[in-house]
Length: 76
Image (tube, rainbow, N blue to C red):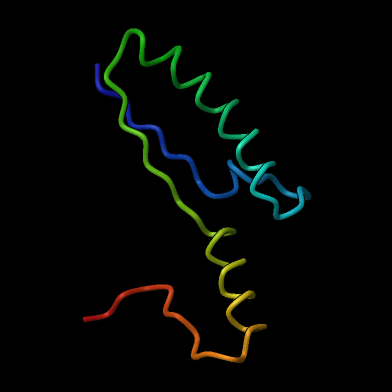
């Protein structure tokens, strides 16, 4: 069976946790362990949303005024 697992950005950075990459890595390890158990018996597709992460990048861009903000999306 093919199973699609969608990890939103909030799954990697839970409500109330500080915006810190090491905390995200710890949360990824927990998720990866659970996904690995499923993948032993099934085909797994993992997708990821990144709302909190993009929000943090937007705040950083807003705070750094020395250069033009880098776009968070590409429009061609």
